[in-house]
Amino acid sequence: TPVYDNTAKTISFTIAWDNSWKVASGPSNWDGVWVFVKRQACSSTNTWATALLSTTSSDHTSAAGTNLLTIDAVADGLGVFIRRTDAGIGNIGTHNITLALNSSLTTQPAIVASATDNFKVIGTEMVYVPQGGFYLGDGRGTNTSNFSGGNNASTPLFIDATVQSAGLGSATAYTSNPIYGCPGNLPSTFPLGYNGFWCMKYELSMVAYTEFMNCLTYDQQAARLEKWGGRYPNQLGANFGNASYKGYLAVTTPGTYNTVPAVFSYNTTYANYSPASYLSWRDLTTYLDWAGLRPMTEFEFEKACRGTLNPVANEYPWGNTLITQATGNNMAGQVAEKPGQSGDGLCLYSWDDPNWAPYRSGYAANATSTRSLAAATYYGILDMGGNVFEQVVGGAGYDYSNFTTVNGDGILGSDGHANTTGWPAINGSNSGNYVKGGSFGNYGATVIQVSDRTFFAGTTINNGTTGNSGGRGVRSN
Image 1 (cartoon, rainbow, N blue to C red):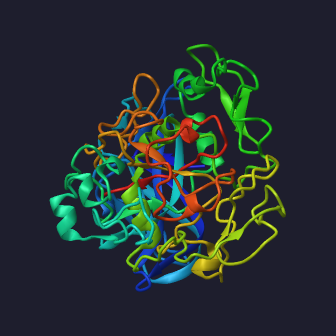
Image 2: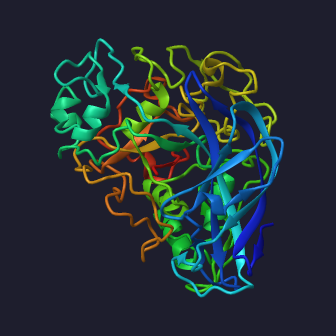
């Protein structure tokens, strides 16, 4: 439980997380936790607003522990990054953290603050993807819609500082036919992946999404249910998902129409460690806006998977063409939940069993597994292949060239959805977003490949009414 000091204007709490690292080579990167604070005037019907934090790193403190922690403030004050100070690998034990609020106690959206307000401290494990060049496209011999060096469809395209600073320009520069790319020229402000960014280590979890739902107003909750038709926050059992799958959450305490929000609960038998599913593009981006994050582009997806290595034709996110299909399940719903198989590229795909899918986040990795056995990306990001689909900005038939590195601001639109300028609004054909990375559904292994763009023209998969779509966010500083 966070402790608020109204005199010092600080919030104190403890933090711990597993499988942390900071390494100097192979690659030089680190993990950390994006921490943000929500504040509510002392009434269960009032809005949970983002409490802005000091933008000066030295205003925040970490008590000495087993590992020294560094707290990095960010320019917009929407949160902080907490990471290892020194090189090392292993779990981060419990540390006491004190964060300084913005000196004027500003919140987004604005509320009237008092000493008796309620506070929530929310953390999301992230991985830093450093600035650097990388290859776009995998150079496969037979290629149509995948990225390439223009007309030479079997040649990957190197994205470096020169390309980023100039912008990628017309789709003829990165696809074999402009019908496969953005109708507008991609400028230097578009996130091509060269610049550094933080990426969520795991897909957005069911626990995190439930907490998000329980921080919304009644009308905002209704906006999350509207895709189903006839489901409302004042109905006991109104389900965000399908009750026959383990990945669902439902109303356990009904709200009052237009005034008092409902309380949602997830399936605690099976979904304690699972990624959120049934996420539409709007569901995902609304969470990211609220959390001070943003969607990733398909260019950043390839960078996060491949890293600085030369591309391998038809490679998966773990850097080779080996794959082991995960089926069956042991210890479902527990922290040690895992499939019945082991091997390189262990991946849940084409096994649409409602009793088990999706698996817990990070199911293939352990303390000693290699990148290939853990099915991890070059930078140590997990589950970019299989489990539930990732959702990215990109594709064809829609001009998304005004998308930038602007992060969400913690404020949702009046309609209850994300409202950040430049973000594609909805999914579907020619919508500026689509799905990558595969899922537990019956879509085969090809769509798991890093450079595969099967759904480049948009899809209904991420309309949020099937359990296959999830996602994660990134943040630029």
